[in-house]
Length: 201
Length: 201
Image (cartoon, rainbow over all chains, first blue to last red; front, side, top):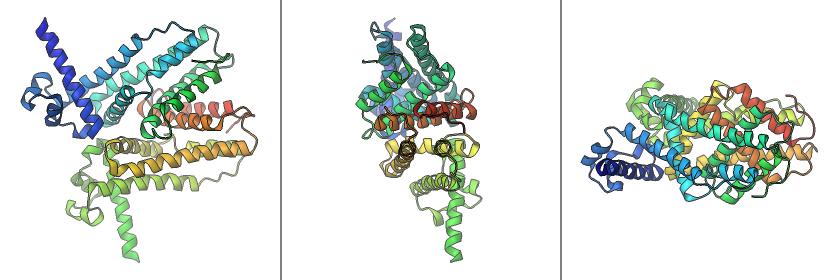
């Protein structure tokens, strides 16, 4: 089915162009015309791929989620548990241009979803999956006997999740004070503070 | 100078109306017409107070910063240091409708500032002052001999700042999972984990 494949590929191309426009000029400037120019297609042909701006936004949100999942699926994760946890959580922090780009665009969708009910389910899904990833990391550390004994898993999950989302936000807003190496050091220190032995990823 | 006072009060009234529109419908929907309706004035008289939308946005950003500062200035802060620190940090978390409102509107300005150079200095100022507040809290705990001995102040400041901004973001995006009481418990647990004695605010 080459035609269907091409159609999907073309949609991805348009969505990627949309994300570049959103990153450069903001969500409210992401007009059909601008996205078409960025994607190198005519404004008229945009409707073959997306009939509304919202459909395009939802597709783009899905695309970011897929990118993060693909990146995680591609990790070897064959080291010690504490290293695997660190590597996994690194995937959702703005440590390189690709992740920084995803997070800036996602931040725009998050704010948009606060006032746009149609975007809320997909936005909530992203945060829920991220929360579950954090939960999974702590469960794995606990299963392997690496978590400190007195730890309250409910509070600890919320704390690690806040550390992750806080580092992501601060790394986007104040990259000069919080460069990737410092983000890594804070995460490493935090994981060390709740585990029994030194982690040295 | 009653006229000048009135003019400033009226600007505040308009800015507050603007923030309500932003909270309800998003920044990109905050048109002059809508804000005028919300403020109960004619669209034509808006230009007496703000000549551009950007001027209105900057004034609104300042207004939020002033509200936070006023709230902090009004705190008694006459308890033990660990209680004062907790009380101070509570002021920048979405623990009631007022703070939730401020944070949702600020989140919209933060995203806008990513692509709008004119809003960047004021947005950065807010985050810098918040960072300095976190820094001040940890210095005070250290001065009073309450911080654990092995603590690296640089990393610890970034971690507490990430916990604060992460809890704020998560509390706005997922209030059902993270209600105010749970936000408080996570902050309390975090402060306990870095201080020598139990904190019981």
